[in-house]
Amino acid sequence: MILSKIYKNTLLILAACLVLTACATKKEVTTPQIEGQMQSDVYTGDDTVKYLADGVPDRVFFATNETILTTASRETLRAQAAWLRQNSSINVVLEGHADERGTREYNLALGERRANSAKDYLMTYGISSDRISVLSYGKERPVDAGSNPLAWSKNRRSVTVKAN
Amino acid sequence: MIVIPFKAFALIEVDITRGNLNPLPLAVSPLSIDEQSRKSFENILKEQNIGSEISTIVENNLRTSGLFNPISKDAFLQAPDIANLKPRFEDWNLIKAQALITGKVTYVDEKLRVEFRLWDVLAAKEMMALAFTTVPNNWRRVGHIISDKVYERLTGEKGYFDTRIIYVAEEGPKTQRKKRLAIMDQDGANNKFLTLGNELVLTPRFNPTSQMVTYLSYFKNLPRVYLLDIETGTQEVVGDFPGMTFAPRFSPDGKKIIMSFAKDGKSDIYTMDLENRLVERITNHPSIDTSPSYSPNGKFIAFNSDRSGYQQIYIMRSDGSDVKRISFGNGIYGTPVWSPRGDLIAFTKLHKGKFYIGVMRTDGKGERLLTENYYQEAPSWSPNGRVLIFYRETKTNAKGEGFSAKLWSIDLTGYNERLVETQTDASDPSWSSLLSN
Image (cartoon, rainbow over all chains, first blue to last red; front, side):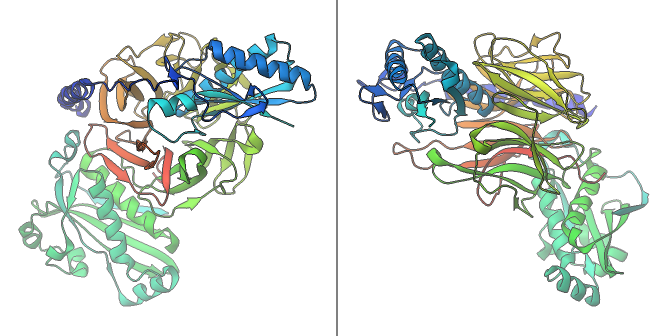
């Protein structure tokens, strides 16, 4: 009895929600691509990039919800692999991150998957898995506190950090 | 705590399907207290008059539920001590109170004794009378228990006031948040920090049957699921996994922890039996399977997975068989949490740049979105399945300023959305079971 009342009542609320959704989605904001800083959702700038050595950037960036490496990312990782081969005593941690537009738990898994996609690539270039560990921060450690597509693109990343 | 019921009649009732559309006007008279008892409690508890403090707790609880409208005490015509003996119903009727709560507090044998009565003003009858004896330090809980009894008597459903919330207290800039486990009474009182903030902590969840909590800690930079006894403060890591474990929750009987384990870019769901420490793998799929939540009878598990390409909600039997996708609406769906009543699953939804907290039936039908915002997630049910608590983050400005994270609650009907006040910023709330029954 109580339940059926709830359902009757909720029909009305559902209708109200639909109206709300319709209003909210009428105008999707399309942020213009910031020239030279983003390409199809992937950060291409170097604001936040640090260097492990000359010409060896420490991080790669990802598209929203993606874990696939871009051409530029593969280039960065090949440079990292070459540097790791030359410095065989160095071990690294790959720190995977997500942007703030996802649930916390899923983002932890997504960060792990991003770091692993970088790890797999380093391994195909001859770096032993013993030298690479993976750590996901999910959305917990953004580099950019902004709430906009450019900030999110900087935060979707895998960063290679020296472990010793 | 000893509870002695006297007698009860069935009179006024509150229609709980209507949210705050028509809250019942009621009067909570300050509990009367003799001068000697008042002085004793003032000495022990440093509270001037716990009779009126307890009535304020009851008033706030009932108001917060959205179902009751407590009348200002300034309008009261009858003194507390006399009202508790025999209310002059015409006086209470005059100020439009339909129900009246009266009571008396005494200090007996170093204990706190409370009696209270609920009166139907229009029918001029007593509906309920109860007495409690407890240690003085429990005085706030007495207010919550009275609230629960009144709520149950007037709505026909169990209350949710004698409960606690565990959550993550947040401070500092968005890029370097300091996070600590914290616990407070459901009304925000008795806030206590449980960790120091030296390492990142996330997603604490109560054991439904005890004062244990499971959560994720980055202790030594190894994100692992931990178990914490909030009475003794002892902590231990759950299981021995060669990688990140996360998204923990207890089984309804409190004997298992269900969680995700991430390895090589895949996240699968595992359980660990807390008695024999046996680990069981529940899902085995190259996708991300996470945010598992048991049904109240323990027979099913809801979780989210991106095996279809995007995050969607699935249910399966507790052994991992019969996996069925249940969310098919527009957008992506996460954080399914099974209602304690068993009939609904609360979730977070992202659609066209907005986040929603909603509920659906366990077959995925009957989706209702309760609230929309820039960012909000992680609903947790009140033990009676009536209210959801979740957290909401604000959008920052162009300079990245203005970030905050706060707890909010909303009624299952979609009415009565409220900010839950916390000392610091807060996220990842989890509601305890009723502490007393």
